[in-house]
Amino acid sequence: TQLLEQSPQFLSIQEGENLTVYCNSSSVFSSLQWYRQEPGEGPVLLVTVVTGGEVKKLKRLTFQFGDARKDSSLHITAAQPGDTGLYLCAGANLGTLTFGKGTMLLVSP
Amino acid sequence: GAGVSQSPSNKVTEKGKDVELRCDPISGHTALYWYRQSLGQGLEFLIYFQGNSAPDKSGLPSDRFSAERTGGSVSTLTIQRTQQEDSAVYLCASSFYTLYEQYFGPGTRLTVT
Image 1 (cartoon, each protein chain N blue to C red):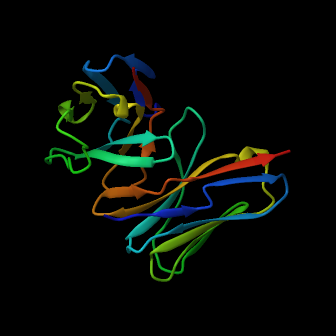
Image 2 (tube, each protein chain N blue to C red):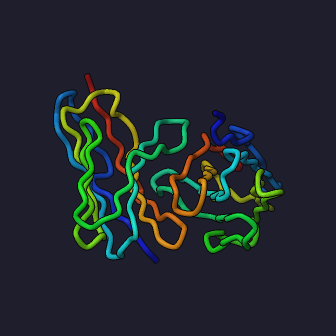
């Protein structure tokens, strides 16, 4: 069974702070995706990383895929209340996704 | 364009009853997925359809769960003889093809009393 461990499970910060969320596994994935989910809605894809060592930037969000394609991180710079939500990582193999349990981020004004 | 839609948005049922949950994928998407999301458990893969191929049922938790996809479009997830542990949000997603970006519906919140 492929497992993805996300940490921390919950993060409460003030607007303007920086944060990093981690996604770790003992398994190798062909690609890794990050989603954000808001209450009452389905997850929305933020980014897909494919190559080991790859770094992608999406405005204030920086995503990194580990060299061995087993782990990933999401760094948010100068967090805003609009960043509040559940952040999920998902590893892809053989057509299906394995999701982590998510990191709930709360950004207060 | 229209996204993935699911119905009903909420369903409350008594233990032992059967329920049907519906998913309308994005038109033209060949892959359709069902997931279950429980509090503190993340998204659990249930079943996956790709075109006309036999579905991947490896995630179904018991034989009380089944799903079909008619005409390569609409899908129905059926849970027979519901149990309290079936209470969760059931999410459907579709993608243009396997491993392409998955677009999720808003989910159906199922409560078994």
